[in-house]
View 1 (cartoon, rainbow, N blue to C red):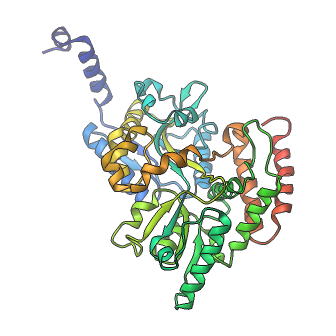
View 2: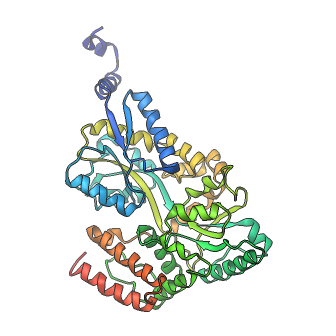
View 3: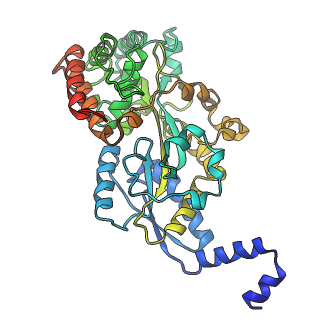
Length: 422
């Protein structure tokens, strides 16, 4: 039967979809996706990308970028500047849509309105000048992990303030070391000079009532007594309740220490929960998750999106992969087996998701009170703003300056970056 004959026997919309599928998958192609360099992220990403490939007849290639978001962004910018077609599907951090807006394809022609099912705030974050530059893949907020057995052993509660965390961590660390565990620490987190430190430091400052680095109106607000106090308190942890090596920790270094039963508290993202439950985890069954300390608690908002490079040779097929990877079915599986936070509100009421991640039912409150990094207010200058902030925090924790001196110097630096307008 010819296509013309087939068209006369089928409803027009059925025939149109069939024609689209035939043209889309008429010739198999290789799609390159940035799943990551290693670890569970690659495992859970490639699993679903390859499932899509099996359904469509295409093939998948993993592009391994640096693990650090800062270095990953720098690499993307180099590739985009060269208009390279090496990457088709790109992982995009929450703070990047505005920075990469000239290099990402508009996904609206391919989404068929499904973006309305995701958290509106994330879709708004991913939209620039009316174009949808990324589909939400998973969302994040900073969390406090703690050893339930040790808090019970010492008769202590989950800390409500950063000062209480400091005192609790020191008490338990002293007790455990006295019993021979000399490698035990009270608190591990991300203190390397990179974007992760910006997230941590925003949480300390916000949790001490110090506001944000730059407010929604673009005003520089970091120079205040509470912000200085927050940085000074963090500096007091180094060499006390936190190892000196934490100054070079990213997420995985902190997780390694905590998962090997060498810390009481850990600040990390939700992804770490599933890894704590594996059989090789020394803290399996001994971990609790709570909102971060602070008055108010101020968790940094994070998360990742999937976008299509403008320079892809196969944008429609790449977009099809993006829509598959960000679908409700895939997000549900990733939530159950990898504790990745869905970007679809409906999945937070899903019984299987909640059974696998008991803490997810309470995350609505965490997301409602999360603190966004000042990307919207600072625009293309955000990378300079963030780098200046994390460098200031790192200098304080390295005991090269004080919190008071750091926020004063940071304010001056941010004024130089801003000049007249962001």
